[in-house]
Length: 130
Image 1 (cartoon, rainbow, N blue to C red):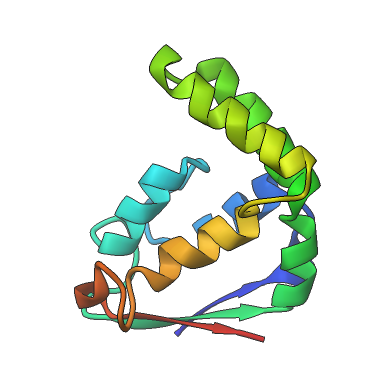
Image 2 (cartoon, one colour):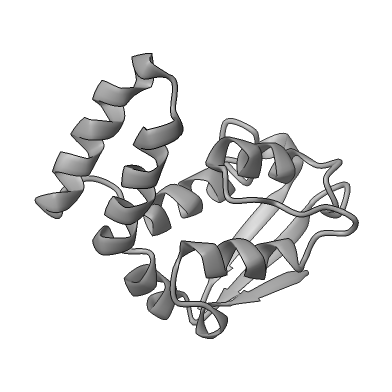
């Protein structure tokens, strides 16, 4: 079981540091595609399935809500491939209207995709939110 605590961070950069401290000989730098890769294994996570316990997830839901989602996407649009800009700009507009998924939602979705019923369930990751 690996545990992250939402009381230990107040933004996405803090979440990145909190999650990275769980990894052995690897640092995750906050790219969500790379996060998906880390969950597949081979980047410092346990092999053969594991439980990710997320303490104070309600605090994290707020910290990684729409304001932080907008900030993250505004930074992302500056460095993404030009063909991805329209999609990211549309997501920024949605977040400004408080519509669509937040960073918290995206992170939870990615993790759950690696567990029971997910597209990558063979990784055996079980997320518990408390």
